[in-house]
Length: 127
Length: 80
Length: 261
Image (tube, rainbow over all chains, first blue to last red; front, side, top):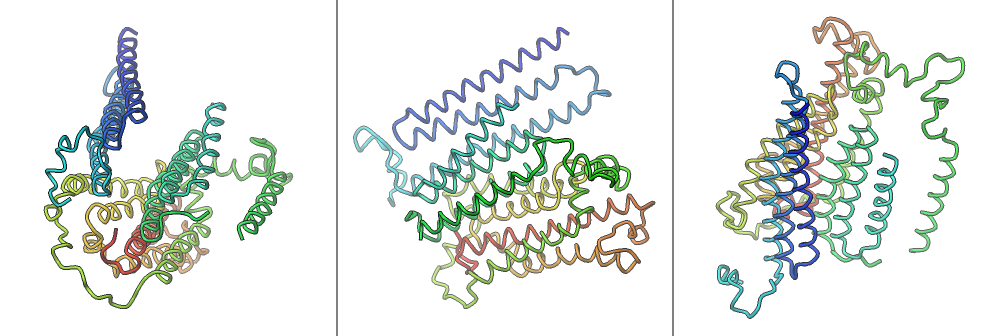
């Protein structure tokens, strides 16, 4: 009983933290000035919050875990959720990078104070 | 769960109308992807997991790529 | 023209809404599917729900209905997909040789050749084997969990599309050439129809899987039906994989099958 309560609380904390980061990502997407900062908010916030929410689900699966003989399907579910975590961790930053790169190749100018502050232009002298 | 279904159905109507109204065909195909995911969610929620799986794989995954490939090789703006 | 189209859409829509009024009520227990027709025994839903497990040894009723009870329908669904792919070929495939204006350096298909795409290429290299493995799992495990030939085939085709999107179309075409995917699409349908014909040669009806137990060396008809469903699903998956990639390759390269997106 005590184990169930503790695990439910921990998983609820994880999911709540994930939702808070989701809120931050959504607000950043709406409030930031240009394409790159918006993608930054969406990419980072989305990755971390999805990870936290799925980890919260994985922890919640343990709430009535007693022994490995009787509850092995729970371990299977946790394994699948952790696999989803891994894939989110690999794919989400990559898709953010690909979108950013597409924006850069499509000549979307970042919003900078003064022309010198944009250091990215120095890295791509061909542009 | 009835309310959840109604929320999804309202969002479905909104995305369907938006996909028709938007002039930029690339945006329209992205909105069509959202439509597919919403209807996938609705089917999964109703218990038709096989259909939802098909919709997620075909509607949201592959047909969005087909639409984008077509838009890329034709013109991007819709005339009506 | 726009108003004519609107008129046609409104007419079709109102006809469809009129047709809906003939449907039984939502969730009605007396509809023909749930309650059965008077004087005709148990309804079809009851038969499927109660007897699928014993008759075919397949826990996923959806797969059993799709591949066995209405296998004829599914066979022609696969043919429809095949026909769609062939239509794409007929409409946009360019058969004459266009001159090779692109020099070889631009077509460097290795990850290092295009330094902008290192990150995307590496991620796809890591993920594509996992995607393909998952697709094969979906095909092979369609009896017990959601999935089956269509879904698995689409995911397998999407993994090849991902190769084409992350690198270029040449990289994908090296792994899955035009000759291969056209023949694979045909082989898929032949496998499906072959399972049907095999039943006829053994004295059953077309697509009657039960009589295949002598060929498939299973004990009893239910296991023969289960294994035949797996075979049929593999046929569907082959066709769908090939056609999905064929459609993408043709659409992305304007039918030239080179220098795609």
